[in-house]
Amino acid sequence: MSKRKKPSRAWLARHIDDPYVKLAQKHGYRSRAAFKLIEIDAQDRLIRPGIVAVDLGSAPGAWSQVLRERLARPGGAGIDGRIVALDLLPMEPIPDVTFLQGDFREEETLRRLEAALGGAKPDLVVSDMAPNLSGIASADAARMSDLIELAVAFALAHLKPDGALLVKCFHGSGYTQLVELLERSFARVAVRKPKASRAGSAETYLLGRSPKKINDLAIPPARARAGNTRRMQAVEAGNRTGKAPEGAGE
Ligand SMILES: C[S@@+](CC[C@H](N)C(=O)[O-])C[C@H]1O[C@@H](n2cnc3c(N)ncnc32)[C@H](O)[C@@H]1O
Figure 1: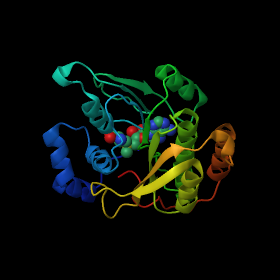
Figure 2: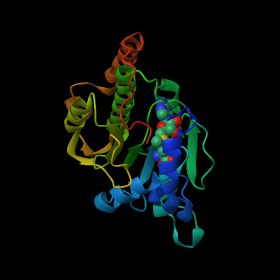
Figure 3: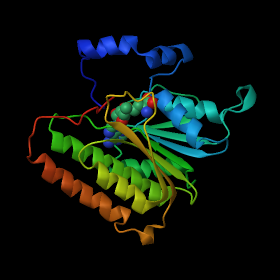
Figure 4: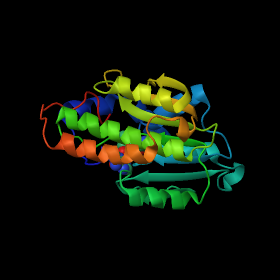
């Protein structure tokens, strides 16, 4: 979540007892989220030396730390590969990780991200982006879908032919459509729910491998981007139900 709210008593109690929080502290990770990527990578072998990786929604930086660890050259001689991380919020620097602060929904941020990649095509795009919740269920679900669609559009336009996109989503309104979007966009799609993702949370990760060619897609990324903005404006104009998507922001 981009706006940090005061945690509830229940959240604090759960956080203090959480084994992944303790493990994160022990290993020096900035958040327990590190173990989600570690677990998915153990199964799917996404992070290999030499890759170019993009980390969307990177703050506070646990996934970037994991990426950096995996690409580290022996003897502390930098990394074999490249990591570009992006978030709305500031992020404490991580050696060898290029960080950009900006809103991924904005065209200008996309241009800066492309410039940071310097023409290099990513092998891996990971997106743990989650929107700032408004408490309006339909608007929150639309914001999440918007971020996912933009991540898919970015992946399709930039990934190497055998590249992969790992993207966070919430099992709830619009989930089936997002899975279908991934299936239309990638040759192989898998659903991942790592143990480190809280059992009661709707959080799920979708993994798409080998992007299909943009010309074969129903919605070209540029149109999807424009359509998203219009759809967001329509949703934000009304439709108050008062409930946030379950598990958002875990
Ligand atoms: C669950 S946190 C990510 C945790 C991160 N993977 C880690 O390991 O530390 C979600 C992040 O998505 C970011 N985010 C949400 N909307 C965004 C947007 N439009 N552009 C960039 N980042 C965004 C939030 O600021 C927040 O830091």
